[in-house]
Image 1 (tube, rainbow, N blue to C red):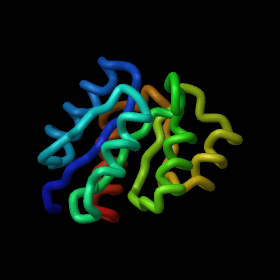
Image 2: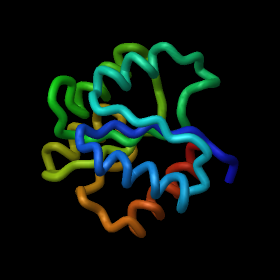
Image 3: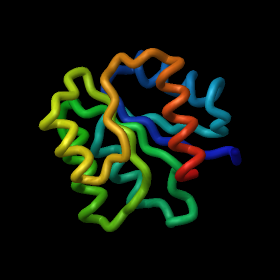
Image 4: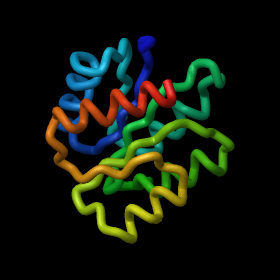
Length: 129
């Protein structure tokens, strides 16, 4: 697998650090850029040329300000298409359906076991990276 850039958006600083660690040490990712708020990630993604966009976006569902579903909708409105995995503390059927309809590839319950998370992220990177 080629090395890739991944963006991770989560309002929990310790979870962002954990995602970064898993991506760098278990997924062969060369660069991880993290954001505490959805608005920051949308602005950063909109500012990038198509060839500079990340191979994968990891997105917390429940965040202050622009939540995960809002980020998915903002990216769609901007015409940005990229693989997104949504992470949620409360991934109910309705939430999952809404995220998938808005363009997410996967919706995972948080906290996922790190081994499971690494496997899913590696598969997503192989498919879309």
